[in-house]
Length: 207
Image (cartoon, helix red, strand yellow):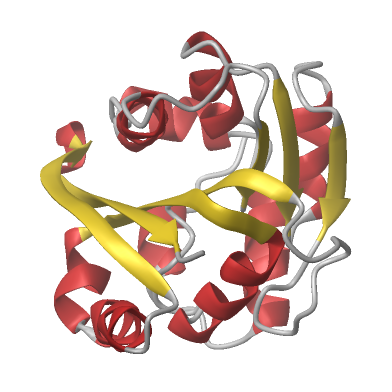
C-alpha cells in the first residue's frame, strides 16, 4: 500500500511523463481515494448528459476515463455504448476489468490527434481531466473534432482550475467564433470530504 498523497502530487505535475507515471502508481488505490472523498463529479456529469435526452445507445467517449468511475456513472445513467481513453495504461488496465467499455485506448490530448475519426461520437465526457499539469484548454479543439454536429460535450472540473480561467476563456472564444454553444455551467459538489467544489459544463457542438 502506498503512502503517497496523490491529491497533493497532482497539483505539482509539470510534464506529461510525470503525469503518466503518477497515475500509473495511483491506479492501485485510485478508487479507494476518490470514493472515500465521496467523489461526485462522475455522477453529476452523467446526469448532465442524461438531461440532454441523449439516446441510451448513443456513442460516448469517456476522455480521461481513469479506472472507470465516470464510465460506471454513465452506465448507471443508462448509457450502453461507451469507449474510454486515458494517458495512463495502469488506469486503463483497471478500467478494463469493469467490462463496461466497448473500446479502451491510450491517448495524450495535449498531443493530438486521438485515434478516432472526425465527428465519430454523439457525446464526449471529460471528467476531472482539465487541470494543472493535465489536459490543457487547447484540447477542447480535439474534443470538438471527434464529436458529431449538435453533439454534447460534458466537462467536469474543480474550482481551482475553473477559477484559473484559461479553460473558460477558451470555451468563450470558441462560442464567439460559432464553433460551440455553452448550454450550462453548474456549480456544486466535487470531492466533499476534501472540501472541494467544482463545475459541470455542458457544451453543444455547432452544426
